[in-house]
Length: 203
Image 1 (spheres, rainbow, N blue to C red):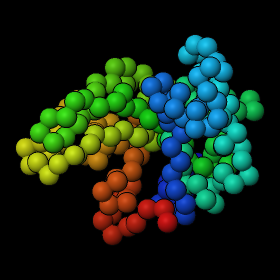
Image 2: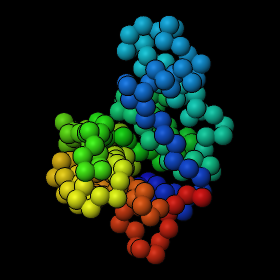
Image 3: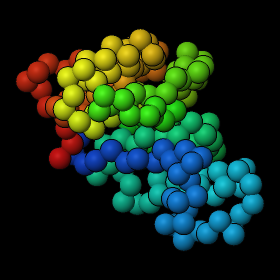
Image 4: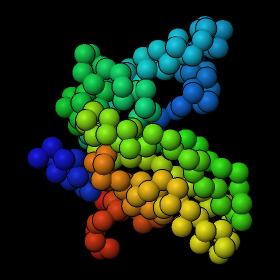
């Protein structure tokens, strides 16, 4: 029942999908934009404590509800942590009405033939199992098309699917049923698997 309600939120909800998925490489910049300089913490553990506290404050904001925010993309460490004693994904859905997604990609390979494929995703099966147990609805991953290069796009379609199984490459591959089985199709504003005539894009 909960999954069906989340599907309806993604399909017909009004608002946007919040990106709360900065990983280690982009976290210092995110904290700096929030007003926390690198001199105010020492080490990765302290950095991730601060970024989680920042995300928790955002999520608990009165404005951060399903009326305006359809879903939120979480970083793995955010998924593993709690807000007010509840797992983050559970808090998002039960307290805020926001659908939880998980970022699963590990960044992009160097550009070749106008495209950048995802890097390998080690331990994907285990991560998806944890995500499903944590209440994650779907996943976010991406490959990037930088140029209208037929060869690169054709190779990217095949490579993304082979590289990460059905959790594949962003705009190309289907969602992975091991973590809720849902993903957003950025090309058409539809959730993958929706009929061509349906429109689940938030507005």
